[in-house]
Image 1: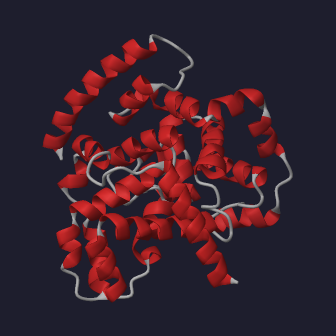
Image 2: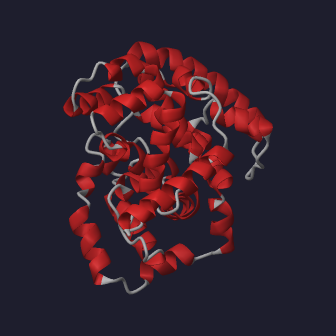
Length: 313
């Protein structure tokens, strides 16, 4: 790990200098081809909050709604929401290895995490609080160190980038898991065939990938690099990552001889140097699975949603 990080720090330093030149003290940025290329190569940590806020539209919402976050915190909150957050989130276990979530820390983020989840649940009562949101909010707080910015980034993710992922029916999440299956059928047919033979539902092996946005699945720096692209390019990046993991480890998955073997293989492919060395990994996600257009995704989403709706009716 130290060897990987020593090499990656050289890359980070080089990228940081280029980003500083690009931004030149600017408080705002506009999307363009050059910025997209820079984002794909990684945003230095000191610029992440700025770029995530700008690229996702969260900054615009913050500026259009001054004082809104504070009003959500000060509102009379639904007792069920309060109870769900208090009982459903072990704040000290959200990131047990992160010093910022320990009560002994001078900058303990447990209270901030509660505030962001409570304010968002009040802001979006159709979602309230759902499993996985604590990890998302926690990561946002670690990067932004700011409750209000984290709140508006949550709004961008849950309201626009990943609609219906965290709603009670989780239709967006279920749909995208089915879409991944269709993409694997198109791009990695032997793996799809194996899943069919062992009757493995995609939700069984990839639901945590999608609902936690790879938090606690892949190494921290790799997740942050994925999120750089998620905020800039949207949900397509989640499929690129999943397809790359499956494509690169096709031989490992094909060794499975039973449903438990398949589940174990999907755990195995998210570990090791391939995902730990985040810079080459991020380069691969844009080349290894081949092209993936939003038009293709949209078409598959419509078909999969209709199929799921028919099955549930």
